[in-house]
Image (cartoon, rainbow, N blue to C red; front, side):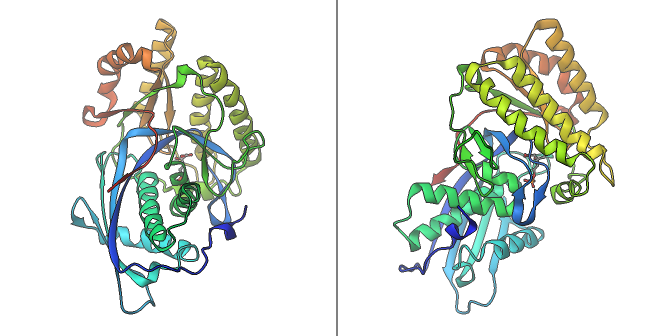
Length: 360
Ligand code: PMV
């Protein structure tokens, strides 16, 4: 399949105005996407847990306008006009116009809200871009009612990818793979797919408590970060390692081998940060409290034989991952020993979710 698959034929139906609302989740990568080629094509495959509570809800209202020579839209976050969001959306519209040729025919009002605090250091680009892509697909479905559910989701993921790479993993399913991998049939660089193989009971309802160590803006934008992989001395080996780690995870998910899961997930998090530390220019995105938390987690694991582990985004916050049957003990540990390292003591309890939902 190529990009051409997503260019629609001439629309037969028309729509004057209307609105659609979708809620889309955030996701946390287990094997990380870090490095990309032209057109948001990932340099390696990645896999993520879909989150359940961290979501963006977007209402997209549209009305036909007179001329069709430019994009026209207003953006609101929590009912407040946000003109500073416009350039990112303008770039997104430019990238996807080829695939949604109706974009210049309408004026759009984009009203968006996050369940997690805006200044939490949790990126809203994955949930935000996927919610917007889904709303746009609902308009396309009004113009082409015969679109299948499969095409709808696949194209929404394809479009979301063009907004923010990891957003294509925020559509459907609890575990989502993005990027071509030899052993995963149907996997694609163009969109995310539901992980197609058996997943052991040990990984059902897996928990993720997000410790907000630094609630500030990201120190390095992901665009800058991905670009640092272009002439990176370890890039080739790293991309190969991501393929291997995903292969190992297939067996881990089948057998329920949490010990190996922990090894892969923590190593992926540290490798992501190691890539940033060894690029030119170089960055340290962890804070002292990130390391305090990691050491406490390792200590707790050794002392209690718990299956707690951590992963990191491209920032200082820590995602604490643990199986459902340990929730009580781990939460007690988090409250007693880790919360002191969070900015203003704030954290978010989440778990694996199942994807986006339409709100009619
Ligand atoms: O989707 P982007 O371009 O913001 O990149 C996200 C990259 C990481 O969050 C660090 C890793 C991942 O796979 O989600």
